[in-house]
Figure 1: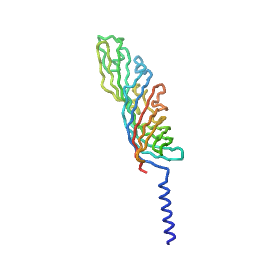
Figure 2: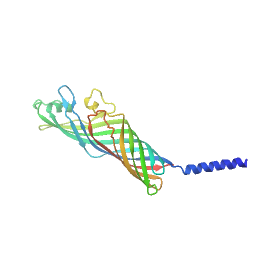
Figure 3: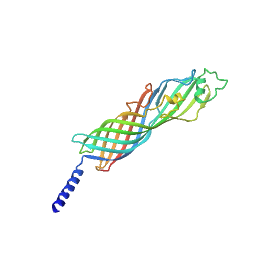
Figure 4: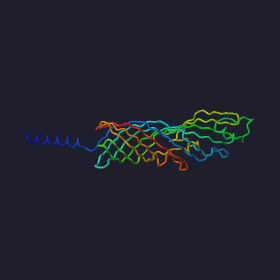
Length: 258
């Protein structure tokens, strides 16, 4: 019996010792996302005679969202692998100005062109948009540590599974001295209206991937402050004719639980 107790005690001590020396750690994290970018959208035909010209959307500031999730890190002698499961909200703010005939501007604004304005009169349209994408992300990061593990740098792919995508737009059409504002419109870019050419062309992918790079600093052996930057190299839109650039910066604070 004494031998059994001694063996059991030795096993328990060995197990605790092995666990304490484990090279695996994990925890929770949360932070903010900062998104910017620009897109070029090809011309879209609304009817057989009316079309929207190519749109060159420029950045209209940095959109702020959020990120939260869990992480696990396996440490090796010279590097580590970190895998996360995060839920993210990205906000992209853009603006564009373009010109169309007054008849087209009236159609886009959902208004009737006044009889005193010729249909071919040049009209300027100014549009401000805010696109929101929410997704489950799975970053797979390869990193290295310095300064007794306090300083980190990492790089790797980030898998994005889209949960929600919407765009809000507000436009103002100017025809001669007449200004025609339009109410704010909201489009579902994940499940677009099949009868809306402007929504269909902006349909986003259910899955894409990004390249991610970042640095981090660990406080008190439990708090991880990370700053990272990602670019969706797999493309966000299903339409391959849409071009541009999208950059996502994230600042987060992680808590090591074990």
